[in-house]
Length: 441
Image 1 (cartoon, helix red, strand yellow):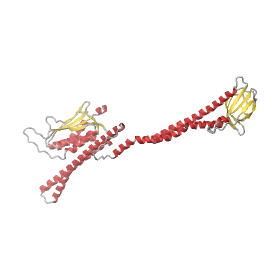
Image 2 (cartoon, helix red, strand yellow):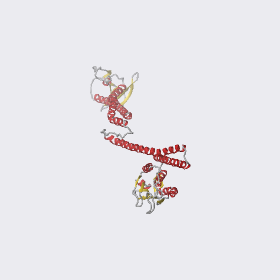
Image 3 (cartoon, helix red, strand yellow):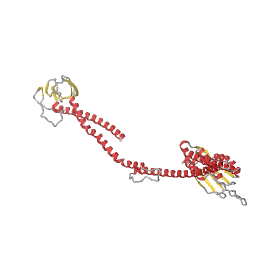
Image 4 (cartoon, helix red, strand yellow):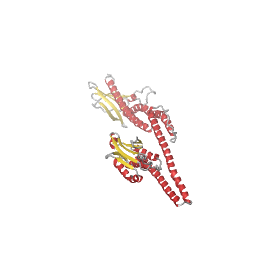
């Protein structure tokens, strides 16, 4: 409203000023034209009477006319060719005789007063006539005409301001209603914004708000589920630690005490692993805001991670195969991709029995992007060999998979189970856009 009124006031002031100056100019031209018209009229009137003394006839009172009725102040002087006064009327002092013609401003009388004059000779140059009007009355007339011209403009600004205020208030009522509906929304519930606003300008706003609410609700549901899973994962090892600690306070033989201490260590490692997963998840959530994406050699990254876990796989009797052609580059966060690759490999090592065959493959499809797939055979052994006992998982797969989904989302990719090969039972795949594909998109 203030910006609208400010712009309107600027335009209004400009038009008022131009209108006033135009009114003054036109009024001056009107007065000058009147002087010239009177002079032309009287110049061609022939009269034998000579009246060298000034004569002034009072007019009949006309109260409905303006007080500055300039016709009462017109003065006329006529000369012959030698400069002798032939006739004179009005209250203007006698001006000096001169051969010049046209408009002029003359200072006459005592006290000195400026008069606007127009003089002209007849065709034979036997007579000259001059018509005079006091300059101050001419200016008063011009000011009065200009004031009459701008008077409607003086009322324009307050009237338009009032009308504009009412129009804006009426036009913004749907926005006020929409704002009230948005303020009444409960982000913790699944409530959506009702589409009851008929204005087409609000349709995109309502859709955007509902989309945001849906995303927020999905995020809150996911966070609640994740919190429940984390609480469950931490409750089991912490409860076990507490039980084993109370057992150590009693009388135990050396074997039971050693087993209790070992169990406490395992449960502490399990709880620590869950906390590490939580820290990785928090870091994945902050990476998009604080880190800049850069080209990452996915093949080299996977080779390094596999080398780090080679010792752990050897101790379990696992067989890890790696297929990673060089030159597979993706645009992303190296730390997060390292976390994702480690989670995939850790899941294959910690959630399968000893002696599992694990295959890690890195590839790149034209116009599709890069992909990383980790498969395992679930501990299946060759015919005639006894199956190895399944290892108790350190934690559930949900937390690790949630980290992988977050990393995939931050990179514009996708994480999901994949169809395993002929000799495998489980396979998970992470699809990522390459730097070339991302730039082309």
